Length: 108
Length: 113
Image (cartoon, rainbow over all chains, first blue to last red; front, side):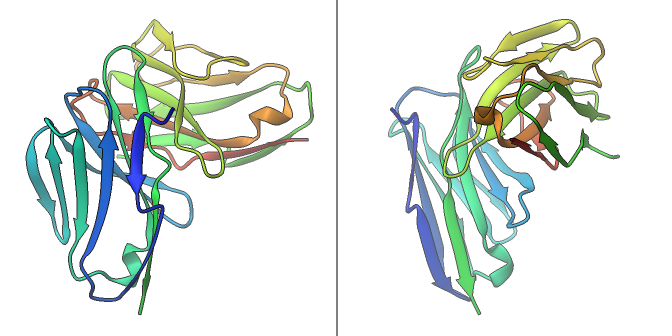
C-alpha cells in the first residue's frame, strides 16, 4: 500500500512548457514536503507547506489539505529543471512517507 | 556552513562485514534521520532521532543500529551486511519535526557483495 501517490511517474517536456506534478496521500497531515533529486543523486528540499500556496522562483507548490492533494508547478521549464521530484510527509511518531517520485526531463 | 556531511560517499562491503556510516550536521538541528533509497522505490526511514540521547525506529530498522550521543552526530551502524542492504543511504536533519524543512546529506552508495 503506497502512502503517497505521485503522477505522472515520468514526464518529458519541451523547454518553456508549464509543468504540473501531482501528489496524493491518504491520511490527515499537518505538512507536506517537496524534494528535488538531481541526476547526480543529491536531494534538496524545495518546499514544506501546510496550506495554500508557496512560490520560489519558477516553482510553485499548492496544497489542499481537505482533498489530501498537492501539486508542484514549474513555469517556463528549463533543461536544468530535469530531476526527480519527490513528495512526502511526516505525520506523527515514525510515520515518514515519501513517494517514488516523478522523473522530469526537459528537452531544449 | 557545511550543512549535513555524510561519509563515505561510496563503499563496497562483503557479506557479513560491518561498517558505520557517519553523519554530522552543524546547524544545531534537533531532528536527524537515516533513509535508504532503493531503485524505483521511495525513501524509506530507517531510524530517526529527536535529540541527543533519543533514537527511534523507522519503517525499515532491521539490520541497523544508531546512536545519538551529541546533537551534531548521528552514525548508522550496519552489522553483518547482507545483499539486501545494497542501497543509497541519506542522512537528513531538520530543526524540529513535521513542520520544518529537511537538509539532506549527499548520500552514501553502498554495495554488499
